[in-house]
Image 1 (cartoon, rainbow, N blue to C red):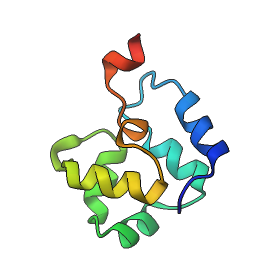
Image 2: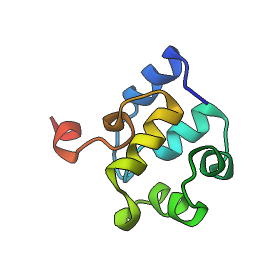
Image 3: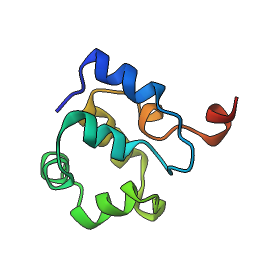
Image 4: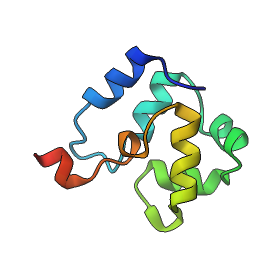
Length: 87
């Protein structure tokens, strides 16, 4: 479920703050559930849940790319670096 241009703008505008990443925001904007993303991307459900909560033990570039492709955005939109957010 790719985000619309307006949704992408909204995703990019949300400050990271205490969130570990913006996956939860992307899910809400797309009005989709983790199970739907997991099924569409082939990412195991527990792994996806861990990523949403900030546990990056299962995050690979391939997984990040699958999520970015699913939402129609860049990896950095979902997983911005703390340095980029702070500046």
